[in-house]
Image 1 (cartoon, rainbow, N blue to C red):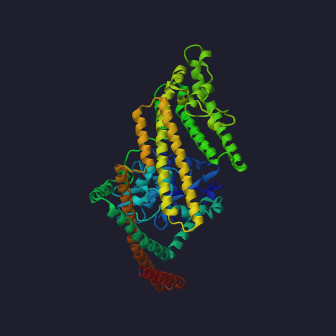
Image 2 (cartoon, rainbow, N blue to C red):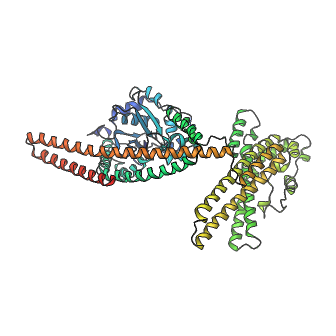
Image 3 (cartoon, one colour):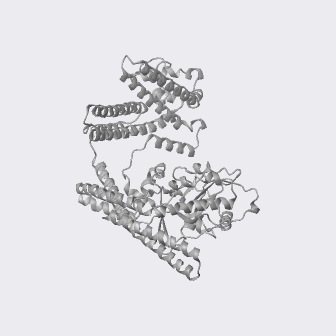
Length: 625
């Protein structure tokens, strides 16, 4: 399922003069029943629990001077054939009521006896939640109650969702899906958009019939090329099945047999649970609780500030503090870059340093200006004589920063040395004096998230370094290749050094904020463990579990793909044979009625399908051999 906003259509000049020749007999739905559905359907606004993709659809909701802002519908997820009578037009962007009607119409085509349907849609994680309720409330739409609809998201779009959507809706983990990407509709819009500009100003019936003919031609071209397409799929399935089986067997041999039985039980339980609960597929994701990131801590603080009453000027303090931490990280990065260049940088390097300092100084100035709402006002509200408390913040910051080894140089020339007015740089006593104790607690929480981010980045960079050594350095066959490989290693080393410096500075600031020794020792133990590349037992077990389950899922999907392609080869031959017999029968009827033209046309069609049948049989036989 997908929408296309290139196929716009203008309002007709004289709608009363328009006559439809094949209303509802092609791929576009019938006009009367569709308008009746839109008149009674309600456009409900549900709360989005995933990334807000509605903004993309609303950007295409402008309907000024347009009768239709686009079209949408359904196609076969395996071969990309448009489904008859399942294409609708949009009036105000891609709304659920439009796609609901298209889906219900698609599920009426040759659906007798089908009890399990797999649908792919860009926003299926939200669209599918209340699908049954919307259909039950409609007097026009209907889906059999015994039909189970399994939602999926295309492998390209799913990465624009939350991380949890990948294992819950990607086709890699859906039993019976085979090896499909769920994005084939995107390839169908390209040939359809060739005629879309020309059909934009046509009459409504004429526009729909042009789209019908184009979609029909697209399906016909896919049909006559089906044998070549299936041969390519069969070749990929053979290689994919062999490779995935070998990879899984190698992983299975090294795994603990007791753990393997436990993982198999988890997989069976996940696939047996109803698809109404997509969280069952979370077994394919790491289950260990991850340390909260700085962004998560910021969101939590903002949520807490919004729920409880407090000074309005401090409700955005978490974001302001987080931006200050980002500026500190930029300062560390610039300092290390300057230190790496040495005492004699080239003209180009000096220009880059100057540009970096200008950008950093601009960010600091903007951040200081925003901080007046949190620090400047607080100083004025502090108890005691206002002039006495209205101290020079820069002097305080330089005194606090001198203990950390920061050089006291003018900020206009060395912004990377500037100590910005964060509560940790001001000191707890100063923060208490000026009445910003609440900011101290918030920065403490954000610093913990910053430390977690630094540890995670160190872990990722060390993994990258291991891969570079194995895949690039060790296999280098020439001096040039080896030089480039070691350049990559040194680049990763610099990234690790930057993250280690950020973590070290974070620990010092945590001490200034009053973090206890237990918290600091835990962080220091974690970073030593990561730098020495000592894996923990729980991480190792989780690593094997996730990789074993995903390798098995990949192997199972390739096995299903092989099975489906073999059946599709037989179905293709049966279809061509059926059409040849059907045209032969029609030729006999035309001969009895003495219709020479119809008899000649039927004979030609019979020969076409017999040729397609013979070509498919030979191609499939050669491929299987």
